[in-house]
Amino acid sequence: MTAGAPGQEAHETDPQALPDSAERLRVARIGKPHGIRGEVTAQLFTDEPEVRLAPGSVIIRIAGDQTQDRITTLLTVTRQRWNKSIALLSFREINDRDSAEALRGSTLYVEVPMEEDSDDDGWYSHELAGFACVDSSGEPLGTLKELITGTAQDLLVVTASSGDEVMVPFVEELVPEVDVENQRIVLTPPPGLF
Image 1 (cartoon, one colour):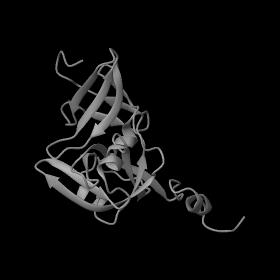
Image 2: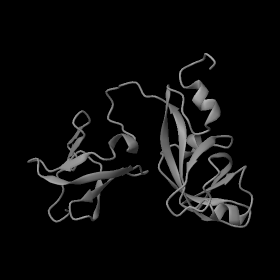
Image 3: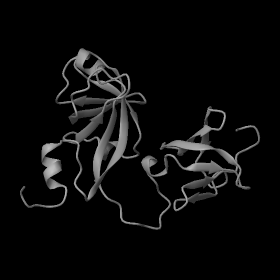
């Protein structure tokens, strides 16, 4: 065994392993192919696609339940562009429509430095997923599935006690409290939303 930085050996042998000073940030989900040269549509989960998915970026790919390609793990972005309001991505490793189709449903992550504790009110989806959602009197409403970041506003996707998915705008009047320590989010939804 060779000496080195903690996590370095695992990072060298497993392309998806992270060094101890990094964490994964979900940035996109691959949709259907676009054209015949391997380009794909992408559902974005980042408000900085021009930075996170810039040409040359190495992306960690995790196959979805229905994804055909279970082998390719790292992708290098060669092009990012927009077709109306749809993000399109090209990768060095994917150069035809069949290979692009085989990636459909994959989730894309980037490696980012671990965040130091800060007092700002910004969160990543993976930091809040699984939190209990309750009303102002503490009655359970459901569990947070994910945080979707948007250009106009962010949305909380809550799996309600009924099993339905409910989208709640992430604004202070509807989400007055996010209690990270107790993994709890207080919601004040309008009547009939849950």
